[in-house]
Length: 384
Ligand SMILES: Nc1ncnc2c1ncn2[C@@H]1O[C@H](COP(=O)(O)OP(=O)(O)OP(=O)(O)O)[C@@H](O)[C@H]1O
Ligand SMILES: [Mg+2]
Figure (cartoon, rainbow, N blue to C red):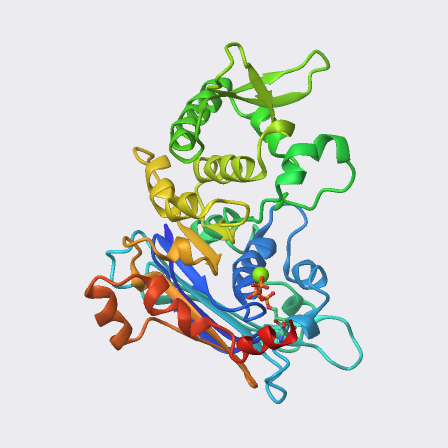
């Protein structure tokens, strides 16, 4: 199952937004244009469906309440709306599932948020429509969505599973390296990769070595002298990742994770996640710490590392990388361009004249990226 469409109303800095997704989609826009906010709409659905401690109220509380989530540019309309369509694959023209969620603050000084609209559609037929007449006088029922309740979501568990499988990744190499030593607080779902080595340790040995072998192959293209990757535990039982490089010196030996470069580690984490799990993978700026030449290869690596896998992961990438968008293979159907303005951010697909230029062989970096350049940025040079 894949997510084919997202529509938002009143979500953070988007008064309205709509995007079609592909196998690999890209959100591009300047700083503070709402890329992370857009990814957060998917994380929000995931958080509602979490098996342990999910739910609408908790997902909102973790974000500072409905007041933080609701678009500040849209003063008169208090309702937030999220609408997603899902299909078996991208060739399917009509969605298999559609989920709609609307909510707003209860007001009256109460902290609660109430569901104003919840709909589930299967093959074009509406199988759930809330609020039900009997709920209208019972606000307590409206504090919960049906997708968060196992008793209520039986008929659309498939949809709930898709949301639960969404993963968000914003890898921080230092946390990958020193996660164990820093210890302490780790965010739920570990978006920054702090528990990466633990996760390696928990993976069945056979699957782990197969994945590491694949990562090794991809890395040997990106990192000069890199030869091999292995997992092991030290005498204390602590998990480690080691890489072997071809050096001029013989017996240069294996290097532990703390000696690997930031970019290498980030790439390893990213390539691991692509093979771990099935749902939509949200990748924040995968270009960070990586050489341009390697960044250019990211779309190819995403494809190659999943080759032969039963269910290829759907990936949504936030980026401003020229190198990444230079890739000639990027499908413009999965691109969302963010243009911030006084009334919030406008999200748009690739336009017809841009498509023509792309069809003629130019890259997204050449055609679309320059338009996301913040206005007035040239002024910065005057500061020098
Ligand atoms: N409820 C809201 N209403 C309006 N604007 C909001 C709301 N919540 C957050 N924002 C604004 O959205 C902007 C941040 O967007 P976001 O973090 O998604 O940007 P980004 O494109 O990921 O930027 P970067 O490239 O720097 O990571 C901030 O300017 C923030 O003030
Ligand atoms: Mg961001």
